[in-house]
Length: 102
Image (cartoon, rainbow, N blue to C red; front, top):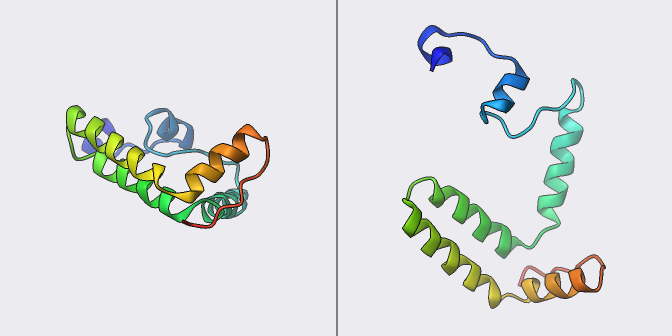
């Protein structure tokens, strides 16, 4: 509140502790970090990433009971995907999944 009302500046570490930022990286490493994150997301299953984004984005706007219902509905939606089955199989076999975005 004091940052908003009096315009006080904050350090990156303080912003992280206040959960205003997801992570803090050393100077000069931000581009490499973002590219690594983007590569991991791009290598994930598109349908699953889409459902996860929906859960997070809508979760901010609804109360707990509706949030739990939404989470359950989206989880059940993943059961029909080939990628979920492949992901679980790959995990149990300790190998990298071969995702097909289906």
